[in-house]
Each structure stands twice: as structure tokens, then as C-alpha cells.
Image (cartoon, rainbow, N blue to C red; front, side, top):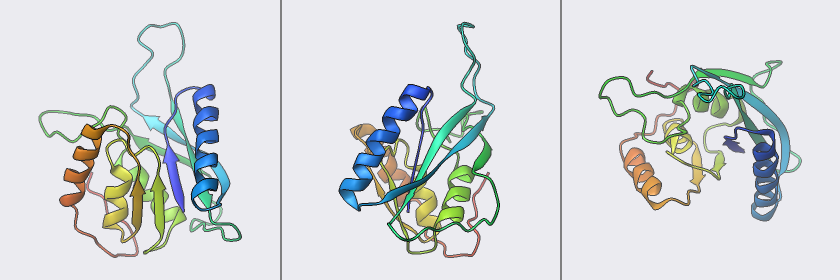
Length: 171
């Protein structure tokens, strides 16, 4: 099962979705099952004032052919979680577009089981990998920026895997 998120305009969403589809087909011959939305609570306004601020990001999920996994019954594919902010000196935010752990925990819980493989083709800060490791999932993280890769490795070293029915995330 795969999860990739992040884009701000319709054109970027289309471009990243096309890139993802090509990547998925090349790697595992998967098929896209749905595109959903993350409502970014607390997101910044458009400071220039010439257009609306970004209120959501697209999330694309794909599965191996012939098998779909959805652990949430009739729930909609709409996720509302606060963005990751640095308040004080906690150094929680390590990347400009870092995804919140509760968002990734909900997605991983909705679409995977322990032992499943998750691909994040735009790893950024590595949040998908951190939550996947805690939840007993395997993950492949792809990131082109070497500094981000080093930050991801540091974050992952600090995570202990936990196998539970529900994914626990510190908030």
C-alpha cells in the first residue's frame, strides 16, 4: 500500500499524480484506488492577498492489483489535522512541508496492516517512515535532498517499533 501527499495547485496535483502513477507502475504494477484530501487546519493565509490560501493537499493511495484494503468502513477520504508548527523551542518541525504524525497515523491505520509495505515517494521529513515504524509497517522513503535524508535517518533512529491495534501518536 502506498501513500503520497502534498501539492498546492491543481496543476501540481495533476503533475505529481501522473509522476506517482508512472512510479507505481514501474515499481509494482499497482493501481491507484483513490485521491483524497487533507484539510490543513491552521494553514497560513495567502500573504499577497491576490488569491486564497491553501486549505488542503491531495493524498493518493494505490494498492497491488486485485487487492484493496480499507479498514474504515463507510468513512470518507477527508482528513482534518493541524499542520506542524514550531511553537517555542521544541524543534518539532524539521521540514517546511512536514506532515503531522496524527494524519499519517490515521492514513496508515485506514489502509494498511502490520507488516505491509508503504512507499512515500516525496519523503521530506520522513513522517510516513516514523509512523510506519511505530506501527510495525515497512516503508520505502524516497527523498532527493541529502540534508533531508540525514534528518530522516536521525528521526528514524529514535523510533522504537510498537505493534498495537491502534497507532499511538504523541501530540
